[in-house]
Image (cartoon, rainbow, N blue to C red):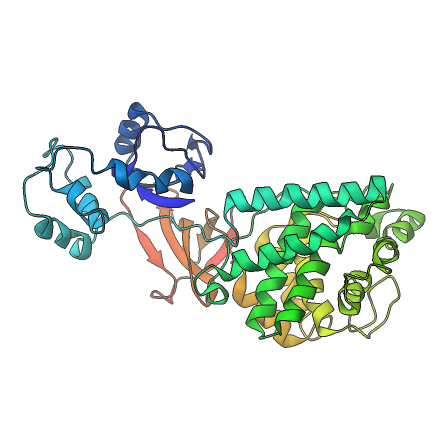
Length: 410
């Protein structure tokens, strides 16, 4: 997925992420193939940047060289973005591309205060990779449960591919990541736990072998759920009848029993699968032990968080509520440094969240600030009286420390 300006769009490009207005109205949905009228409509609506599929983006540069060479833009693809941004600010006055030198066009992009801020959604894995990996996990786990084959070992290769993809991301452990609120899907859940646990492991400086064991164990940690007849989606298991609670809490044992004789899995990975619901204060299950390794705690933190936001064995909550829950148990359920590493990685207010500030204004989260997951960049869309703000008003909570987010608007 690649962020491009609307002026750079070409017919045939494929939208990679929903294009939305401030009120969450979807203008173009993911997967839409761009046509000329769509580009015009985006200009009219003052939408300046969109995400397109990477494969389309990769093929775009050569196409730009086809037009006649007397026009300045196609000559130098590198500085194209600033030039386009400047040109967009006065489209009515200059329907045809001006002949001014490119160097003159670049200046407003740096100095004009009214340039539109680019929306930036930072994810751990590219959307296409995430979908492929999730389907792979589903195929492997279902094949294992229903056919009792040895195909489970393929999960090791999947884990290694995930680690490789994460490490290819520049300064991966220094970024703040948006996590989706979504429905209960154990395959997507397994992938999410794996990616976040891998990031925490890297941030804490664990060895390659430890990172690998954590990644593999994360992908199969909930294998035991496939054996249950108890319904666990979107409900707090503590509110179920005692017999169903007891059955649900056996799922780590079912998973461990399924993999305990697998020679390709290390003892550390097997221990993670068995103990990922155990807690340092002995309040966990299935054994109620306080002998919980740090590797297991890393997976446990990620599992607890993701179960809360997708509703696996728990009532679903918003991201910021799940994060507060993890914070509350720092030093009680999990080692403090593990929780700290987790809190530094996950965006408290994901991209696109609608929030209210202490000044009474309503804003949309536009992007995250590295190292400060609780203080993103907002675009203010309503004043404190509830009146819509049509001009672009950007507040960076790192630069303006007097502004804080008070609540998330559902």
